[in-house]
Image (cartoon, rainbow, N blue to C red; front, side):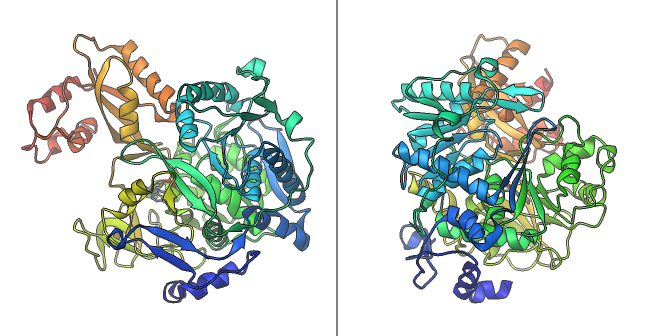
Length: 631
Ligand code: 6R9
């Protein structure tokens, strides 16, 4: 199948696309594109001429086939005992009610809608409601701060924001509406007024903060519950925008990765189907990702529903009320497929096997991993303890930009090697390039690029096509540049070695060093900051910040706390540095570029392996920094 997907790509994808409903067919060739900047503007289109609809394919199609009573979502809340069950018919009704309410506000084809919620069924339902009427959703992860949320709202300029009052995350209440209120105040100052805020009532506002602004804010009960259960589907061109999702890069502010309808839909369908071998009638699938990240888009909101499968949606955290929660959920719903991240696996491993072995987990048959390279030790624990040695692990390498799995095993077909994402998925042609951009052959190590467009590839950076071309297609002409380094072994297996740019991966979250640095310098006492990643046993990487203070400002623990809380406020708690290292000066080249390589070594206590420092403008800063470590 793989060979055919490369040599006979059009036929292959056309055949796969038959599983979906198309209101109108496409014209040949299936893919019309240019990804070589030297040949003109980069553009990518798939299924030109066709019309379809994502929500129809996720819901109506299954109901019309007689599966309306099948469970679409088993929802498990943060606290044990909080649970809801939604069948495909019930989910469709919810989606239609939201869509009708959005329509009543004037939301239509191409309108932007931002969502800021916890993982409740209303979140994927709101995404599907947008898809049903051709609106473009932008989900912002509920861990982002008001400032970060406002930046994303200002970028996409929606008229409507959907949120919830607030919810518990583990033992901690989170006031989502209060954060939205603050974000919208910031937006006002920048000249953008959001006209409508729809709020799901979870915890009372009196408990979690936030208020209802008359004329702007409405509750779910007032606005949505009374709407009709029927909302006609808007048939959309294949390349109609489906969503924007903001992600960090090595420079500047986060970019809105834009995905479109048909190609993304097909990618979500076939990867979920083949990589997880989902059997819709019998499997209970559970992806632990939040819908605020790409994994929660493709493998929670869309993939499983496109297949008509039953899934678990879990609002809480894996360690609440204790580290056995995930396995208790597995037993409770007889989960057969679990898809999670190495950081969660390592965190649970650290708590000991007893939390796992106290549950049967007999229903499990397949495990998945995503977000960062999985270290062989975590792989083995996941395989032997969680999966009792009988469940294969699908280590799936992909990105927000790729829309779906790119390098991954296929269960039963691909012999596994712990730590390797193994081989390319259908239609994907990875190449390993040297610094000059030459394709390396056989076993090698270099930069990972992709040779040809695939259906679920991002189409542009929202509002900034030049940045799209610059980021992904300029470094290596004629290829999509992933930003990852990679090794290929003698069996042709790929081993991702991590980012080659200034992007950190903290607990599977992508964070640009530039973003953290610019947050730190927002503090009045900080003149300059340089951020590097250091290895962390659970998080993969943790954030280590070198900070230069204004002349005359004394370093100290109070200031350290203030700097950390500045980052929490500007980006979000998950981007908080673990270490603030006072730096009277930073190692720079004569042209003024910070030498992060040197900082990484100092942070890792490996200054004996600094390598060539002859290009440093002032080599003495290194010794000063080493002496200030831990101070
Ligand atoms: C899906 C997702 C993408 C970056 C990617 C790479 C890292 C993701 C991985 C992996 C090794 C895996 N990454 N999966 N590295 N093995 N199985 O995580 O998207 O948040 O955009 O991050 O994550 O560095 O470039 P996103």
